[in-house]
Length: 331
Ligand code: HEM
Image 1: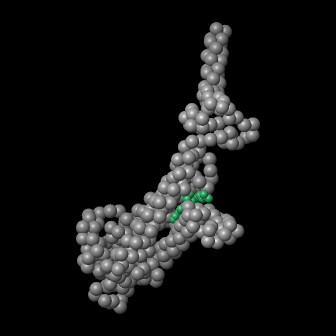
Image 2 (image 1 turned 135 degrees about the horizontal axis):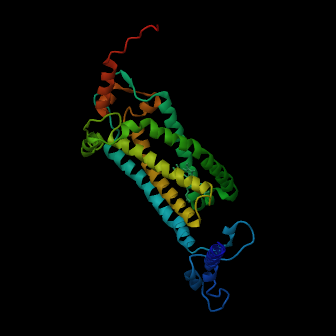
Image 3 (image 1 turned 120 degrees about the vertical axis):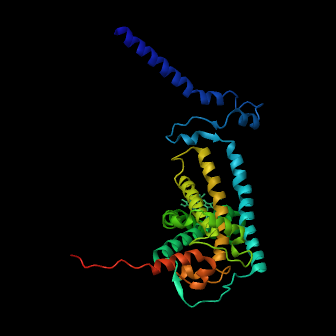
């Protein structure tokens, strides 16, 4: 028994010794090059280790990182590449919309108005839509201020105004993230049933959705274009929310590399998201006659429903014709 206890102590001791040696190996490697030697170049230092790190006695050990060379690539992305991606996506989409509008013009109701309407969205659906859309627009403007504010806005309005505006924009970005996230979750639950891709969508896409030409391909409640918008909101919204909270509560879930990745995903997805939403806003306003009413008053003209969502109209008519179950008095 005594020899067993001795063996256990020996093994534990050896294990602890190994642990101490491996835990201390990181700073040792970093010290292989004498950083103060006059012959050492910065490049040599950077190649020596993924980060240059010392020791600190304060609780926040992150402050011991002196240099993290990957941060230079991230900064290059943040200050140069991201601005190109955002600029091309957003201005490119605006240019495409203008060209498309000049060529095609508004998609008109070809059969005119029937003068009878049908309910398309309930008050609750419209409330969720407008709450999410309002948050999205404020999040987009305040986010763009983080990316482009310094080079574009600061020279125009000066330091004091810029810092005042940026402070409020940052508050708005942080606080509106919560109703935005709730909105994305509700949109996901509310409209998932009508947004599962099916065979009708293939035909709709093949026929240009009736937007490119003057065709009226069949569609249920949501056509393939609307389904694309729905999934952009659900997936894009999910990604910006997940990465956004990681940025808002830094270093809870990951180290510096994870933070950099979160910023890259957040900003790139946000830029593409904004570009897609511009197309959505266009088609819901000046791009198509009668479309705005669906989210405005919640009803659409029956001819609009017939031209753009004929299978949905048939379903709704069949539902209206179905005899209601007789109400019997409670016994
Ligand atoms: C739950 C939702 C969201 C959360 C929690 C969130 C959070 C954040 C945080 C913490 C930052 C860093 C700000 C800073 O550096 O001071 C940020 C940046 C940014 N956000 Fe959001 N955000 C959300 C949604 C959105 C949406 C919907 C958009 C666009 C429509 C957006 C666009 C941006 C942009 C463009 C940046 C700047 C990226 C950069 O240049 O570094 N965000 N966000």
